[in-house]
Length: 356
Ligand SMILES: *Cc1c(COP(=O)(O)O)cnc(C)c1O
Image (cartoon, rainbow, N blue to C red; front, side):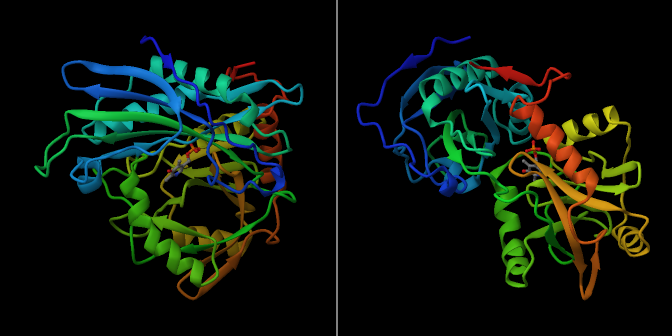
């Protein structure tokens, strides 16, 4: 592991006065963690420095050919005031998998975790206190070579920035309406769907905008070949409950292997539910929703944890799921996982890393 140098900011920002108005990803803390990679030398110059803009060459490769990957996780404040992370090593390992697919170097995960811990120790007062709030953590890796030749860059930058974020749900879980996208696709077999690369988001923005204008809050993506099998939603994996069984799309290379997905599947099994990972035909999903065989549907992801689906719409057909409200299973899984994350419930799976 590398030594990490620390340069403190001499110009600290005021902390947000009203934690009910934090929103998502608008404010950033006083410091950031950076390390740089040079081919032949590896990762080096690990440092915590004041948060400030990067100076970048306009010909930097990331700006043209898009070698950019990121992660998203949170630091939670317990009722006793202490801080903790949820499965951080899984996020860093996933970043290395994203990097490998994008022709980028494996992350120095040990130094990244140590850098994150030291950064949070310095920024501890930025972790909000209010119920449901957290400090969002955004590790990112970009290519830095200067030049327009298309090849893998020889230099990269890894950085971590932190943002205090508000409660995703201010008044309890809220069901969302979802538009099944039947024109555009997000990812294809052999592509980069399983990575958290910036381009996957760029490719999804247009469809998201169109759906939003039609009054939907999220797009559900279908597979890129037959446009028939459920993939995922925005930045969430999808799950469908059939009584005591939970079905979810299998990890097929084109969906993102969510850490919330994995955690919810484990918790559901521990709570006595059966879980099935497979190919889910959207037409069957609609039939099962109409007949009542399917009892609930919800998305899973770090931001919302659980996002209950109130209705699904495909072309002109709309189905309401359950009673259109919040299912009991969605609520139970949400309460269980957030209970573990905020330290209200015992962590039997070794997921929590206590920082203080
Ligand atoms: C990040 C992300 C998810 C959810 O992953 P978590 O690890 O649970 O936060 C799901 N789908 C996509 C496309 C994502 O980028």
